[in-house]
Image (cartoon, rainbow, N blue to C red; front, top):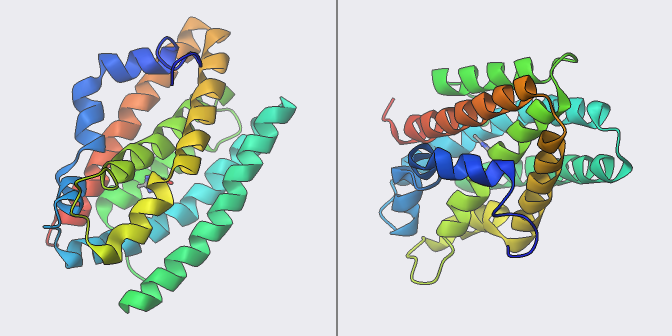
Length: 220
Ligand SMILES: Cc1ncc(CO)c(N)n1
């Protein structure tokens, strides 16, 4: 991370400033239980089906960012994100069939609310910096969470390794790093009002992610 501004940008300051919330979202009991091998497989199954629904809603949100991006290099990065989602959708279907899980499930409340939030962020009048901050935060929570389960000494069950590698791998980490740099660059030239809005969105993403993990752990 050194030398790329990762420690000094606006997003890094927010991670520091809101670290209890950030840690709650990225070191959630659901993730800790995957890492220590004690996760209940029914929780993983619930997470998988719900996350598929989330990712379906994620597509129009990223597409809205593609429309808002003006810098050629930003367009390339967002387009790469869309391409990765195409692969991700196939992975969910393959994984669901492997586990015998139906993806045709009812979205739970925490998921519905998170999806509604994504829809509101995809509106044309939402500022590019605000939406980019959200994309960075959403992807980064997953990377930080799942890469934690890959650290040496982890007891992550073999059958969950593929899911952890999907978001925990270093290429995905690189993608998150690129998103962070784009967000930081945008925020540097944004108005104070937009910066405030972006910070609020960051906090909301962390809360939504926490609720999503809670939902995955809950018995109903
Ligand atoms: C809830 C949630 N947050 C983030 C990601 C990362 O794409 C995901 N797949 N699902």
